[in-house]
Length: 82
Image (cartoon, rainbow, N blue to C red; front, side):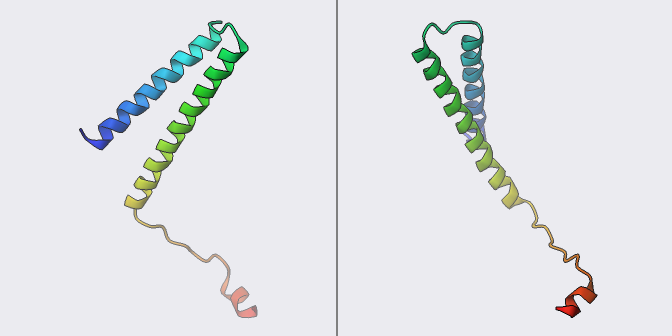
């Protein structure tokens, strides 16, 4: 199985689980504060996992792009004064 396929399936699972937990909370399916805190903890963990996956994919994409160019915008006269 390709890595991209695994990542896409993982992201899809996380999104589905997040939707399910959100519906559970907003529809009144929580009957105790302990259960509420547990579900909020799961939501936070899944969101952090999605963000970390996104960050890792972004780093990989940036390495594949060409590097940018830094341009000095100070005038030549300014450099002569220093």
